Length: 172
Image (cartoon, rainbow, N blue to C red; front, side, top):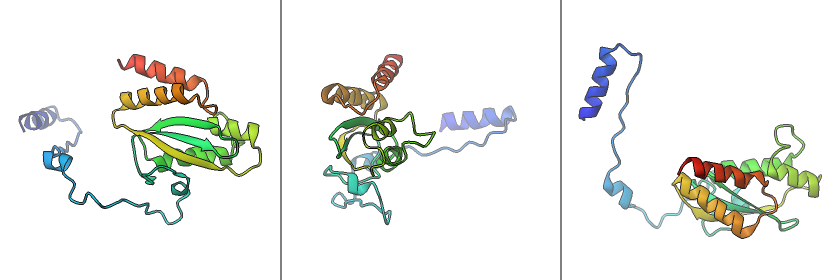
């Protein structure tokens, strides 16, 4: 409360055009307790194109902070990635790149390259598996790098591992 009072006072004193909103801290009960632990979230999108692609036990396209593997069912080659956004958004992007590989904004994407090189004109057949859930960005990137090393995915672009290395070096 002291910090919020001081911050508000400094803003008013210096006549800054800033509106301050303070969000209350999460309560320990909210972090540790789940009032409905047996409820399973299900997708609310009427014709979701992502949920049918998920083969993991947790078939929820709205999960965030996940390391995932996407397999091209036409040739069994795989791609490993991570996202802090919802799986629906990120996997949807991959599906779009595979569906429209010739679109100028897509041509440099891994799935666009894969589908234009190996499956031109064929509708994408993908399946997705969640490998790890991790909210910490650095740990999620490390997990992604470890899965890339372990699985040697053919669809990943080679510069992706270098990008992960640079991120990890700059954040450690």
